[in-house]
Length: 496
Ligand code: AHR
Figure 1: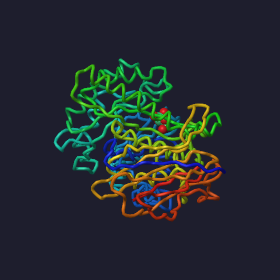
Figure 2: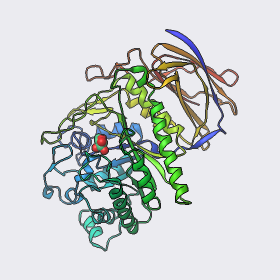
Figure 3: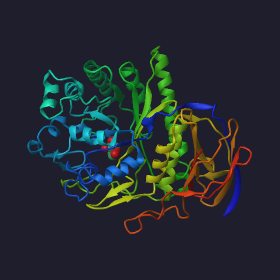
Figure 4: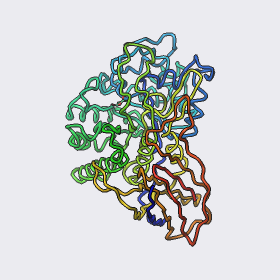
């Protein structure tokens, strides 16, 4: 191992933007064992009286999810929301085409709202733009948000919910640019359908916020034209535009994989440019922001066909140290781009492409659980525009990249700051000076670190705590400077 040196200059007055709390959101889809056996599992000894898993709820609380997107995903584009409301015994069993599974509909919109209330998180619902009509979309808004006195609001009341749910965030479809999507549309068809759905939805409730479907990833042949056309058509009717992306070390090239932040930033930059272009073209005074409402590492277990089983094991990805460091960089990018990126939802919150796995009576927290937990609990207020001077190394995919990937926040209200640093080097420890240029913090409150020597190290049911975040002792501040020796393959969260 070699040592090198870096400097991070921090000025709490040099800000990028306000950190939207909704950047720490999650996504729960009727896919595999996310809903059934994940969130809702009446057969588990951990289930409460409504069938929700108490141990899962506790782990989700640790992560402080601020919003949860539901019910899909590809599932959404074949879903009739009426199947999932009303007396459970009368709900239909259906063949679900997106994941080729049996959907029992025992968990639906109202169970999801109850789950969100327990977690104290904002529900984010999707409307079906595949097999669904704009009328179905409007009906769901009426069902959820209208006061009693009309058909769908009264239907909700007859299901035990007299008060409106007040759902604020709504996705107008899912990945409609993808040929794999049930009822896939070309861009003009989607843009017009989304605009017309949006009008009806907002006529029911003008306070709701709508998210149009953006590109499913930056490799789509229609990217970024899909985004331009959709935004030009829907601009005055939507508030956010979505982006989805799944990362992976598909070429077994860890140095490039560990530099994935470069790709994440480029994706945001292109869409941010598209937003600015459309705003100018439409001579609009209004802004639309980005919602990265599916993001995660996903490349090892991409199983997507359920063989017509109930809650089949699908895409139960196992995460290792390098995956956790990619997740930490992703979160750093969210902070560095928080002027335009306002919502983000990790896909998904349990079992499916998730850092949280269940058995009937067990729960496993994987490596990447920890960076999310640390950042969602520490990053508050404004993101800071840092000056980072770090040594570089060469990567095949992105050329020279700095060894350190860094973000920081400062919360005026509490006077608390945080700095988040990934050392992506596999061999070099980096002696790093954190230099506060204005208002030196009085104390370093705590420092947490996730580190290891093997990029492939993973937590397993046999060794569940192999790679976890540990608190490390904080050295004293020396004349406004904190010096840390950051080990290779590490993520460090510092709170001051
Ligand atoms: O999260 C799994 C799937 O990935 C979602 O259903 C879909 O939107 C995306 O392709």
